[in-house]
Length: 91
Image (cartoon, rainbow, N blue to C red):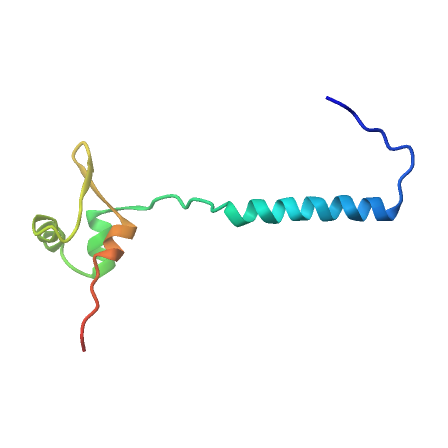
């Protein structure tokens, strides 16, 4: 790898280097999308969110309105899937 030593530099060189770095960062940011962590809700959280009983949440799972995920005996729901399961009403 070659190394470049600047013995003397002026403001124009400094500005050109800054512009080059800015362009590279802008290109990087165009293609970079940070991933949001997934939020999991328990049955209790879902029932509180909609103001319904836990048995209603259970019925929604049985009727395939909600997609439950499990770890051991624990049941969780992805918040994004719960929100996506809402359907607009034609009022």
